[in-house]
Image (cartoon, rainbow, N blue to C red):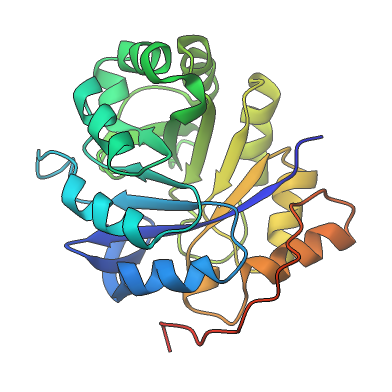
Length: 265
């Protein structure tokens, strides 16, 4: 079994670190580079760095910011936001990103997943799926930061993305995002049973047991989280300790690092 990853998510806008609930009510919670420096010291496996306004503003990914982030980041990181062509992926990878996450544009032109995987390797292409459970009780895929119902159903879309060649899927519950009420285990389980690529669970983590459940009950290969690390004393290292106690294989770190105070305090 692959070792499970714990991945903090940093959502940013104009260098400011932001967080919302249900992809809405965004508020500033810090700055990106200080956050990266803190996570460098906290035994994280990877980082997600997503520009939340690039798509809605119809602008190119900010490669200058990515270069600045890469200069400070000592762990692998994935960038997302506004990606809609291969040339952008090329310069983002050259700017220091290890992977790119593609979401909204893949609905308009799914072949970007195939072309980018063939060009750069599937290992650096993360297909992102944002899912909302609507009043009809059904799951629907949304794009444009949760604003547009694409008409796609999560299982069928995940299967298509896998066939197109993505290396892994980032699966986020819009309903539970920022609530700290736990991941949508049913949604995660539906997708992990439908595809063979790794699925990263996102949206709703409020304690370590939620993460354990996403893995053991949902079948996730990794857990992504923001609020639990931004607004509580909980840390990725303690999350992995809990997982290890529950028999989940995680990456061990043997280097003792000096504790750094949270940049959110």
